[in-house]
Amino acid sequence: MTSILAHHGVIAVFVLMAIDAVFPAASELVMLYGGALASGALTHQLDVLGSSETGATAYIAIALAGTIGYLLGSLAGWAIGFYGGRPFLVRHGRWLHLDQARLDRAERWFRRWEEWAVLVGRVTPVARSFVSIPAGVFEARLIRYSILTAIGSAVWCFAWAAAGWGLGESWEGVHKGFAYVDYAVAAGIVVLAAYLVLRRRRSITMARRASDSSR
Image (cartoon, rainbow, N blue to C red):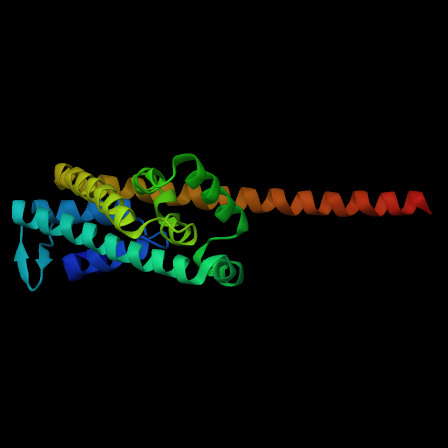
């Protein structure tokens, strides 16, 4: 991802943030690295539509690219939910990581916060990628939805890009830190898989014993 950002600059940020609006694409890392590129502290310079830029212009360009890309992706997600409705998600939700349980949680979220759930969701890690389609399913008003999404997206993108700018030359240390997070997540998945397998085997064993005792 960092290689894509280094070589394609604001276009890569725009595309990745549009994807993140409906499917997790590590928006924190995208904007953080984009901000570090904009600062000029890294080997690569930021590509802004064909020209290499650093400084305030590059920072604004990267933050706006993320904000606008995410907004357009969010509108596409809203349209999928609005026109496809629950039947579409029941059939295809697994491809978007939106199973029935996630949809039910989203519905409770919207019932509690109403349309403010959009703004809260946009600044909540991970959850921000699972707001767009449910908002369409639950028929959030498009204009208000767009305004709240734009505000939340701008706060997110400008803040993370600013953090990346501030890190500057310390980026390599942060990059290594993200690698350790990857290792931790992978280890957690292995542990969870082992637990589920053992639990499944135990339930099968208990079922067999119960069947044998009933005989």
